[in-house]
Image (cartoon, rainbow, N blue to C red; front, side, top):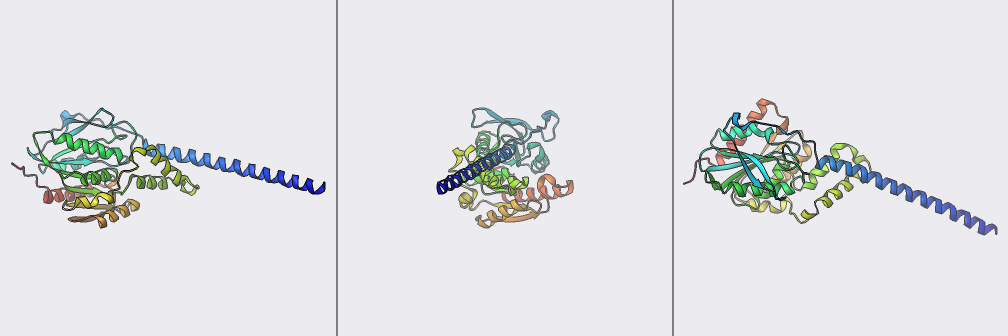
Length: 309
């Protein structure tokens, strides 16, 4: 009886220990899920502060120009006319930014007779929805170019692209698929939207908690399950052979700078590489002017604004 009592006692202790560990594991999983879910929500639905402008008083005589997006609605952008039948440069803002933040670059390009177009990606500026950090944004850029090519005042076969981080990803993806892209400048680009999720989660400082990063990545993949077969930038870079490319890295964004440098190394020519101390959004007025002069010089060299017959 004594032996049986000891066995029952040990069995009860083991059962209690197992139950305690199970409860702890469930608590940890729930905590990780809540923390990673909250982080992912903040990343994919950033706070928007749309900038309002009266186009009638803006320099450059911009026009509203709309194009269709995947949900069946229309997305409105701003078209800044340059020389008639000149190529069009589409300016793609970055994550946590909006079209109003890149207007000085638009002015610099328009002053050199380029047509320029810009719009707010989903979940940014005046556009509602949840950002996908590049997946649907690529589709929006494709639709914008396709619709711009129906105009009779632009060169329908020559487009240029400039983009930063999320906009750079979309620009690289589109350039790998559309032969009308004749020149491309990207700043702090990344290879895959999941890279941006990883960078943003790590910036939160919560990756010290076990499994938070992996849970956030898994959540992002589930939310964007329709894009599970979307090729990374490195998989389509070879198709940009012959397209002049400028890759720019910022010292204050080391993770993205490393990503951009890897893409530069993998990219076929012709290509150039440049480095800046600060990202475009944080530059001083003088630094931004120098940066924009560099971008303008690149497009003047590789995408002449002289109209084709």
